[in-house]
Length: 263
Length: 303
Image (cartoon, rainbow over all chains, first blue to last red; front, top):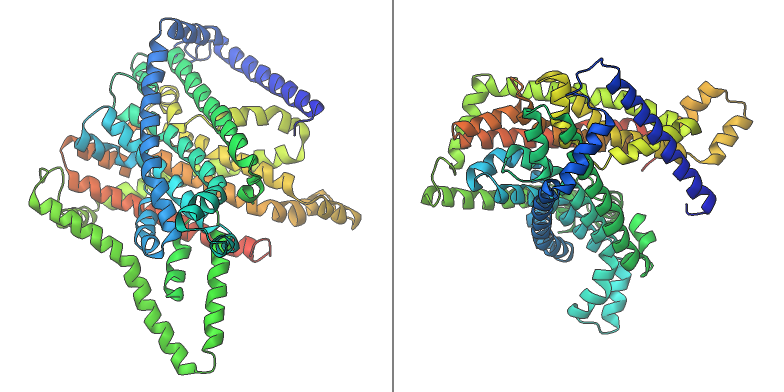
């Protein structure tokens, strides 16, 4: 995976394929077959992106979106993580919440948007609620199955050596379930990121990247839409690679649990 | 008690430990029935009584939540128009079903989902297999796919609406576009994961390209392909409801609940959400469980 030759090859193919795609797009845009307002050239998109970043509007939108997604995610982790661990440890808790979670999970988070708008009004509260709904199930299910996947032998060894419930929790359950928790957090972020964009489009509130895209449609500004799309893609990519990649390296791989997590 | 929880547990769709937990349950049941194998009538009675509490255990949380909802609704802490009691929701559901409005909305949504997903399945599986088999295709397509996959599908919605107009075409294309990503990536992984030994063994025994594909590559990659299809369908479903709200299609469940907001018809919205949940659950349980049993399990690729 990380031999130098492989890395060069992957860089080269990345460059080639991007260049080809860009050429194809540019050719299509310049051919005049489509209106330039609908299919702007790459230079126009780049200018919209740079203008937006320089005058700060795009950054402000990104901050608004990040605020919503992180607050919603924090809420989802705050509820989903303890509940999932309790479900994994205690059967009555599992028996009560598992059917509820299984029934709510197949409902897409965006289906709740109209209802949440009525309940919480347009704006931050609705978006945060939708993000929390979208993110809570991956967190819950992964915490639950992570705790259940712990080798019972470890628990018995722990108790045999005189560990109390508290020590058992910190020394066995948390490290043992950690790969699942990281996987759950990662999945939760992806879901949350999708949900926040959709919620911002539907529950429009003047700020946010989703709102920018939706608003630009009204004025036929395809360049602004593509620029905002690029920012959305960039932030998602950065979180996925930098934040979660680093988290996994720091914790899971050091404890030697990564194989168990992927298996 | 073991049998009781065993019945509840496999209901979780898509948990990472699904296989292991099914195995554990089977093991527990095995131990129990060995113990009571000598007393045949006693065993029969144990099963019939175990089944009733299992059902009750599943129903209990819903009864508790429903009762709480009823109490809050009838105390009128919130305005009844915004927080209707369950009987209002049920009557809305009944009224809309009898008048044929709800079935029409649901049928259009399912039709859209099916067309978009069919598009994605065909294109995604073909692209994925091509990428797995030919290096050139992999080099050209993989970077684009892995860059496009993390961008949320809804973000493309306004762009698609601009390019293809409001309505069905945009909706179906967007659903297809979004669900193609997991299908492509998983099919590609699946083809790559086919054991080299199998390919070489087939070659040594004189399999031509066609037989190799049908007898080795396709069955070998199928567990991954099915995972991809399942993920793709789940993603298509999650996105479709949102897109229906944005695209102003004339019929569809997403549009129904979004439209009901204008008239404060909270009961209609809740009925719509309920139907959406039922369809989502049905997709997961009926469509893919069956498909998996028919193909992968029968061919012995998964137990």
